[in-house]
Image 1 (spheres, chains in turn brown, orange):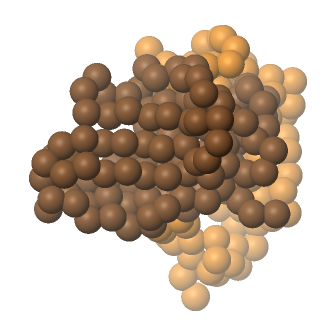
Image 2 (image 1 turned 180 degrees about the horizontal axis):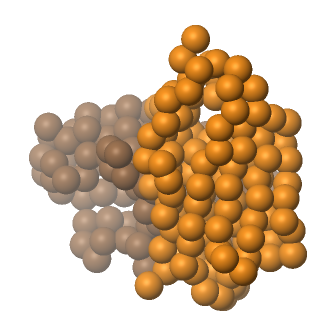
Length: 115
Length: 115
């Protein structure tokens, strides 16, 4: 029973390039969340998605960031024209139902370094 | 403002000793409180989740308490082991419903267990 799978685990991008982070939720989970964690900081919510729908994107920067969770395939967090400040760990999480009252399971994270 | 404050920021203890981590929150309306363990370079792993009516919940050597009146929670670790070295994150869920934007994360307490 695989957990939340994220790839790549580590990604290096030059300023101005695009970064694509992928997340496959646990089997049977249709709710996916993305978080960002800066060094020595807590996790910050970015976006909550269900299949083909964005439920809450209040934590997403207005520009350059987008997320999707298509009917088939993994959820994708896309960062266009990356800048040094985008360097962080990006965690995906999933749950079987709505987040209130449900345990949320995290992946191992994708570490983005912008050089 | 909805906030979750954890103390101490960091803690060093000897193997075999007990310790208690604190979490104070100013989150309203309250839905539930969760403790997660995050090893360095890994994703958070759920330890406990407690609703308003639950005062204590155990998971092996981990025991969480909740005082909803004073808005305080603690995580007690008994007979610590080297593998307990990690960050422990307190997370409070707002009672608005399904939006993931309603999970408020603390910055964590970094625990180091020394032999």
